[in-house]
Image (cartoon, rainbow, N blue to C red):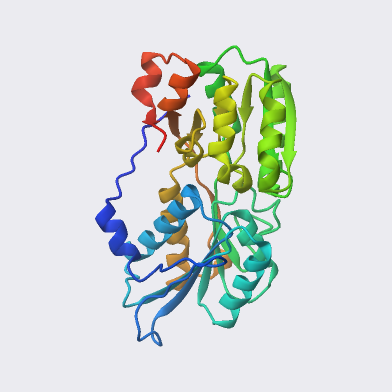
Length: 337
């Protein structure tokens, strides 16, 4: 497996400049912002998040930056960003607000927000960002010929690469714990792929599932005493609770293999990941194609490959894991914030 180093060099000044006027304030239920005052001649773009975490906000920022780099600067493009703060009722309200405000295009980050917007059948084009299984989630029917007025990017989790990395870094794993939320189709799909891989290798696994964030601690504790490692799919519920999951796993001296760099930033041991900013930028290219006159159905959805090995050095030290020189020279290392 050939692992490339992450090339992520977005300066704080450039990012702030891209976001000035695009995002403002944060209420208990939603977060929103618009650009400029004379908006009648501007392209109106909405961005919806179901919940905020490091990965999703990086995707949002990458999307905005990609639009700006393509010439959709603040004087030409009004951006309205809203976050439901994890509340499905808020999410549905935000979808209706975006529709009633007559957006030219709405971008949605991850599966729940994308499903909510597409199912509204508003007639407003949708660009989905980082949906693991857009066909299985009912967002589109065909990646190459998108329907439902929607297209975008998929971050199909590289299960074989992640579990292959686990075999390399911690080769004595006999039993995995699979920790995920059953309400997220992307998580269910990823864990089904993990089970197929583990079955093919003759490796045992135990599932511990949740339906909401209040169940994460107990579900993690149930695994901690009975498995040698935990695998977490790209699951927004678990990802939001990753510091708690990582803390329990560290105390039990077992590694957590996540499905995003943000999970590793939050304490998971390691992953093979996609750059979240980059997938946002690639999604912005889809938006630019549509805004330049290409019909949505003629803009294929794409799977953005993962290629970056990310390791949390704080976790490695806590678990006493020794890393080879090859790993040290090819991985990006982070520490707990």
